[in-house]
Image (cartoon, rainbow, N blue to C red; front, top):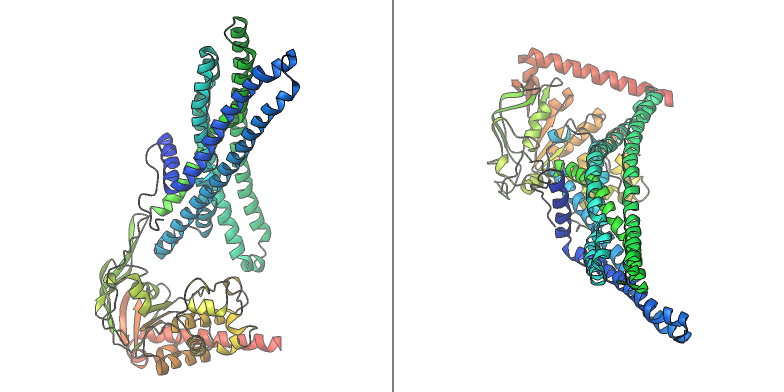
Length: 616
């Protein structure tokens, strides 16, 4: 099964896309669909056989019994043959449905695996272009829509074989009778051409709205606290209701188109049966057909009524599947602009890593205008040093550390870790020794251990012992809290760490990084929710215990004091560098910022003490 998708989308116009989509799915799950189509073909053959058996029983058994030329007991022999055919027919139906369902679910799983691999691979700036609701819709409803056609497809393909056998059987009985039965096929093709014209835009809009509804719902759930705090529940409800009403109208539109199309598909086989009866009676009156021939042909066409409708089911599902597949392919075919290198090892192989920014620039394009985020940034970090990046909001601090972790690539210049440009390193090599902790700490709905190790028990082998996990928790100043939880390392943390405070989530994220013993640790404002005392304890522990280089985005003067070097950024440029004490003396901008941070920290601590006293 292919994990990476290249040219995942469908070529050509709507008709070509439809054919390619069906062929591609069958090719990907060849064994399953061979069995499904085989069972459907067996069903078709047995259906024709059943009609011939009925015709044979009519002429050889029923009519002679009614005429008194054959004993009534003779009917049991015919009934035995009929029963055997019916049992085989039932087994073929069960086989077709089971294998068709297996194929559908296998293809859905494939789409979701491709999407999952691609979403993990794509850089953060791509994710910022799309809402979480839209991406959830791609993985769920679009993946399901893309495979909708594969459920009736084996049936329809089996019916093709069935129609071939039926045509042979009818032509062997009477040419005119056969042509009367086959007349419905061009009528069905014409009906489908008209159906596709109206169905495609209706389904396209409905699929788009499913993603938009998921987006609004996700925003409401994620912002539940804000909605309650701002008393905007009614506004959010109105927004969601308006979007669901749009989806409702779009689905009704799809339903109306199908409601107009389905009766035509339902009626055409019945029209064919009527034509066969009329032609059959006429031909029988001329002496060309017997009663058994007419009964067999009419029964065959009545049996074909439901199978022939399977073409209608396929044709009805095709527009939705093509559109769903196109939406899946939009993500799957996205090219990653950050291509991992091939070097599997960082040099030097052991010890803390040095860092060098050499004339680094980074810019983004918005509305056809280039916006510079970093300009000519150059600085060195010696192995084992602690370096603080300071600056006002929007000065480029997070962009700089994102370049270091290779979440972004510089527009120009080079970022070196150890002795190598980060661009030549494989993703595994970089993530093994360079670990970044973001300000927003994500916690999985899993145990403490799983959140720290990022391992799934029974799925991935454990690389970390309990002692290593506890040591990381101790360094992150969260061990005592974990010991107080029921189950300790096995305690469940709830979705997004809902039973933890912001500071506790940040400390767990820091422990997640520390357990890996990184040679370069990047803290992107990762201690912003911590008390100053806790932050100092964590940073002090890092210096005394771990043999690592630390680069941190800081906003507290106390953090800057602990750093060997402070790099002060303003509007994407380095305006000063040195120790905290040196910058206080030499940079008025830095001194002003440090004072503002101190005042902000003091005000927050005072507010927290007042809240604690009120709670007491």
